[in-house]
Length: 282
Picture 1: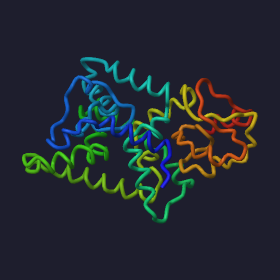
Picture 2: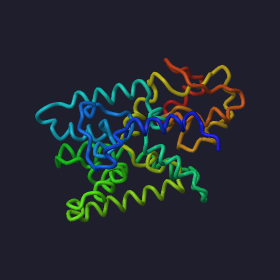
Picture 3: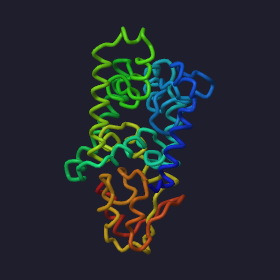
Picture 4: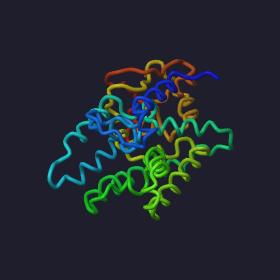
């Protein structure tokens, strides 16, 4: 089976984020110096193999202590990632995105995008505001990590509980809830392309805010584009145009463009007159 360059990039990123292989054997969490550095993609701090921190977990931790110290570092990190790559990170550098892509390859009937999924795609902004920002500020607990994050449950919660008898005795309703949420999301991803990315991921919501100004990503040559919309019809995400806030820069649209107007590029994006008129739609 042919493996694309994007798949190799996703695999390499997942391995680099979790290269503390000894931790998978001992069940111990790595706490070396590089653990203070954030990965671009969603990857749990408490995963036994993780050598760096999750930006979303770090954001919530920073907000918990914001009364005493403003989280300049994590906000600056997210700003840097967003300005350079935007949601290119979702398509190429997120281990949980990689897992979702693999799950969707399981041969089953698939739910195609529609008006309902387009509306649901805005739910992740509510998750960002409520669980990743307000709950840490008001209730002083990492709301998204504690109640929703499937990556944390899959990478850290389940492996650590399996290996640690003391943790097994402390299992509560909250852990059972997280496992059910994780299973539900993983099953949904088999039938719905990147269900977590599209509807629930706060990190994707953050990166999507940078889509108009991200330095690197998918570009459309306005001189070549014939506005046939083959790119939009064949995209699995809830996009209205190439490289809007729902685009994960996966490059699938490139394969379907009949005039080779789509490419990866850097610098300021160019828009045709028709695209400029659509700017207010998103």
